[in-house]
Length: 282
Image 1 (spheres, rainbow, N blue to C red):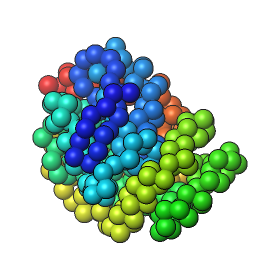
Image 2: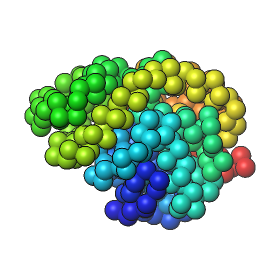
Image 3: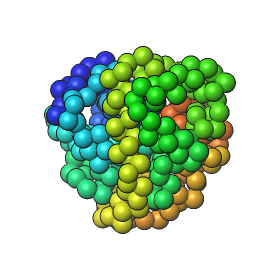
Image 4: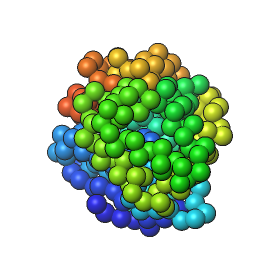
């Protein structure tokens, strides 16, 4: 893990491979390792940069005054690109990472040349499904009680419930158990997480507003969705693709929301083909 000091605090990130830059964003209670298998598969085609954002699985607490709202974290991603000098990137996001990509596409997208949205929060599905609603509800608890509530996630049977990770991934339980360690063991991470969840819950129309500006993003977009997703409705993927002037929509079977865990080989190939098609057009 590399580190970079940003206005909100120190961000860890992975940086592997060579070629055009692909920046990969994760969602709530996940970290950069969500993308490990995809990055490994694309290492010969792309420079894959994956930051661990302050979304509940980060290991380094943020500064006391950091803006941990989703718009604030989207601005942090833009600052991250600026600090690393990354231009004309392909920006990809899964789960709430896809919400961050939408916010950037609808706002300051100067450094983004292409985008990839993978089974993600969109429109009125925020917080998304049973999983998101349960997590946002738990964020109303004081940080110590939130920590006590989250301790039950140590049990695999609880992690596999629909209100936890059960409808997010078919085969990624080892990763989800690892992602939970910081919030289970560090009081400062629990404080960050509660702040982030409360800020997100306070603005449920955030992505509805962002969608109004998405048609202004005129660069190529791949919208890739799990056909059996129970948390992020596939019709939202189609709606996103219809809004964007230069978007293509594709689906994958045998996967839930966390496609980078459930179908990393398929997703890597979809990104590779998307990039090749964009290069052919240009």
